Image 1 (cartoon, rainbow, N blue to C red):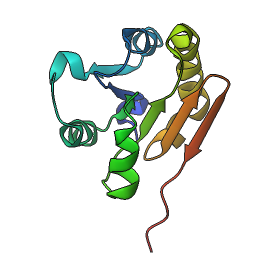
Image 2 (image 1 turned 180 degrees about the horizontal axis):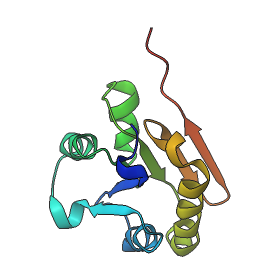
Image 3 (image 1 turned 120 degrees about the vertical axis):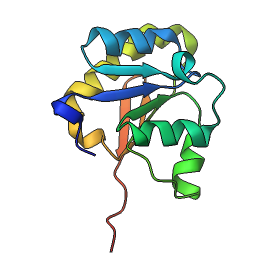
Length: 127
């Protein structure tokens, strides 16, 4: 996925604390919220919305790992946030730093962001 107009595009899942939505918006990226646009959507519908709109999904829901890896569901990128609640503010800054540092390499990847660490897994190359 190549970001439209060079702008990073994100879809923030309803499972996420609002601090993550605000941090991405304040960084100047194009951000949609599942809570505002399709509250109650299933995980499959959320992934489809992200793909249809070329957005990287930001979520706290580990089920997306299952959906993407075990089920082989296509996606435009997923960032899974794993943190203890009191560290949400710090992880929001880390999310912005991750997007700034890795930018386009997050497209199509599955990233897990934890306090102090990030793991980015690229999909296997099609043969």
